[in-house]
Length: 111
Image 1 (cartoon, one colour):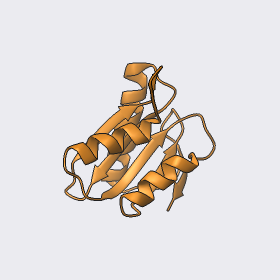
Image 2 (cartoon, one colour):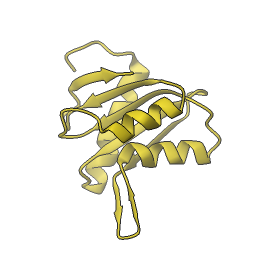
Image 3 (cartoon, rainbow, N blue to C red):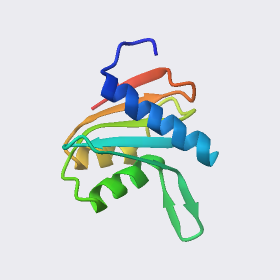
Image 4 (cartoon, one colour):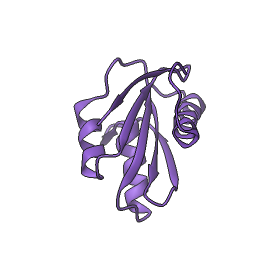
């Protein structure tokens, strides 16, 4: 990564990369909640359910009792996070949102 990140932030980027690679999905995401627990997910594209990777990771965190996020990471070919992804992080307390390339290089920080 071109910028120095906190080791915990590097960890969620690594988790998002791993989830994306394991599933062969277009995006991977990971979040860290207020207690330090992490959740990773990929894009969900079913006929009756569509979620971005970040939405899926946040849903997992909320379903496990998370009240807020410290940080979130998306690994994607995209140059910017989607508006809905920014909104879901804002809904969870304005933690930092990282966007990284598939190789793990940091593209940007948001929020």
